[in-house]
Length: 300
Image 1 (cartoon, rainbow, N blue to C red):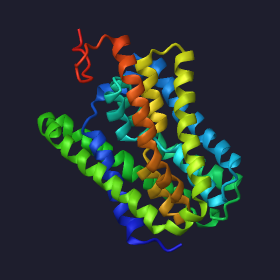
Image 2 (image 1 turned 90 degrees about the horizontal axis):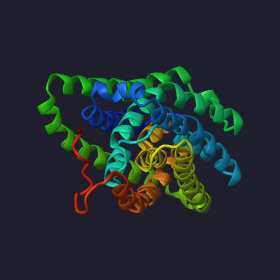
Image 3 (image 1 turned 45 degrees about the horizontal axis):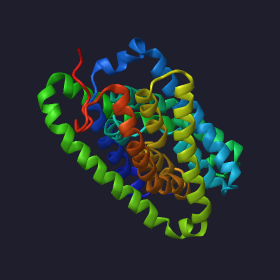
Image 4 (image 1 turned 180 degrees about the vertical axis):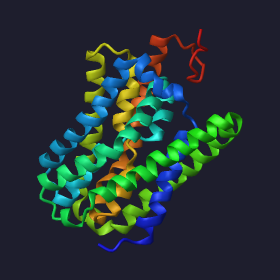
């Protein structure tokens, strides 16, 4: 497939900007948290890196999606948590630090997990796109548009925290704008395919979204994590980095990108409803005063 400028240039730049916005908010302490609070991080990553992709396999099979669309759904399910999950976790008064840590670690892990589940889904669904996929190229692309900008932005923050704090808000707004444009462009560009398969796609993506958040929240609670930690984990499963999924998919076949675009239409609505549901519950548990605006109490 001959790739367009959109797929080869604009999409990778967009993902790099989004990952840079995350990196500006990160410090080495966020990565050390895996040793300080290993249980929460381990359970969250197990949900994100194992449960989510296999849920996507099951949902794709349940709705009998066309092979390319099934691969796209698994690719979306295997994608790391998105930076917007951190914001929604904060608004829900969840454990924002845990959310940021999971997003950062899953973004680094995506260099291995995204190509792994992509190759597996192509084989399982016999999608007919395997001959066009250079897995080494996928690994290199994911590395360049996730790990590199994330690391560079963290370096900027370490050298000049004040400047990084000034840039973070602006870059995040730009990243959100780019994300919305990408989703809109993907939907418009594949409008006929989406129209022809909308019922199945809408049901499949919504089912994946709701199941992923529900199951991950329940797993976290069964593992005796508190409501704030469970909220963070559920948000990570509900709000994926769909821009990364669309970018990888666009380099394979445009139809593979459709599930991530359709998923993006629903994920903020369901995650927003979940945030609203957990807002008061987390306030009671963590002792936030009414009217605090969701700000976490100062550390003792």
